[in-house]
Image 1 (cartoon, rainbow, N blue to C red):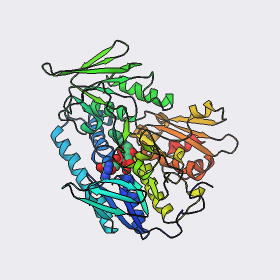
Image 2: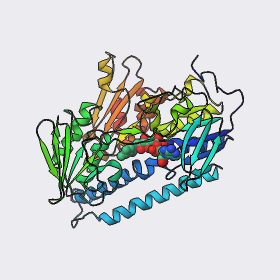
Image 3: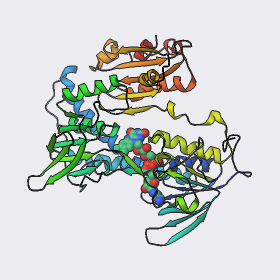
Image 4: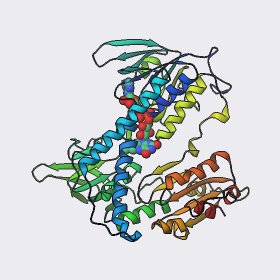
Length: 467
Ligand SMILES: Cc1cc2nc3c(=O)[nH]c(=O)nc-3n(C[C@H](O)[C@H](O)[C@H](O)COP(=O)(O)OP(=O)(O)OC[C@H]3O[C@@H](n4cnc5c(N)ncnc54)[C@H](O)[C@@H]3O)c2cc1C
């Protein structure tokens, strides 16, 4: 029987938790465990809130929101509004990001303190299967022992050895929210979610953008139809696309104030700045995994369906677990760990099903999907029913002067059960929640069709697609 299948591994409900890393995974585990009666110590070396608040989700979405508002102003004449040209106030944007981060950090710390979680500032590492040493900024140390240890130290950007990152002209994703100055001509390397969001936000700010994509499709993991919709939009905005080109070197010309990215197919792009969005690596080198006997692969902790590592009592969550690198997934893993370790709700029905996690890309048009993808179904020869409607047939989309995109629903042809879906268009990240609920709850297309929805609403496109 897999560990934890029938309940907690522990004969007595564990009470002392030590959590290393205060991002979404660590915080959600800490608050849930404390609510369930555990004594929780959270060790964090920077700020509670984690990379998600400081460098990733929040600043990126704040910058995208500003770019989106700017675009709306530019498009206002189409809504019958005469406008004088609007432009980005880069310093005001910088202040806005700092303010949002401070507010969120305050609310996370407040929540942890209200739940009675002890926050220790410092860097934590395992010294054995149930012991942790914390090194504080002043050089002193604290030794802790615990019945439950949760490793949630996250990940950081991968820096290729051919890229001379200087934080000025050659930037990782962490140095780009916001960058030291607004690029005149930005080169983005990396065609995944982070890369396309950079292309979108900086082109919305009015910067020239060149996008280096090593495959023949942006977002190579996504539905080709979804990726094509985004590519069309980028091209319409004047983004220069280098497809099938793998970056192999970056050179900086300080005198000219330029950077040049050389690609393996002979093409080269010269601009004012380059951002590398080429993946991430786990924060685990100094975590003492081997000292505690915790199994790992490529630096990611090996976990089972309960996020339990190879050592009883040691769990891993978030990016460090090598599962889906999303804040939402990290937070859910943290919660599930707290419940499992406290002996609550154990059993297969409580396991996280990563294939049912909704995700979004905050470009314009916005992209969101959940569950089974059409291409994956075809790859395994699974019969599916695919229904699709464009937003151009939706009254609210026309009212909003944004009829781009479509809704696609994938269902089982025999039972009508909703298996997945993709949305490209305005508010896709919000609208996908309906399909996510249907996928998680095993609802049928008729359940969506027969819902009495608001009119006019973008959500009506979901009912039309489910028809
Ligand atoms: C550019 C970008 C944009 C993103 N946007 C989104 C988005 O819109 N939506 C979404 O769902 N996901 C998004 N993600 C992914 C998301 O940021 C991560 O999946 C999420 O932050 C993972 O949470 P975590 O708790 O595992 O780690 P983190 O948020 O990385 O937190 C880990 C914490 O551990 C601390 N730490 C590390 N080592 C130690 C140690 N030894 N001792 C003490 N503390 C330590 C760190 O200081 C940090 O605070 C984005 C990622 C990137 C790169």
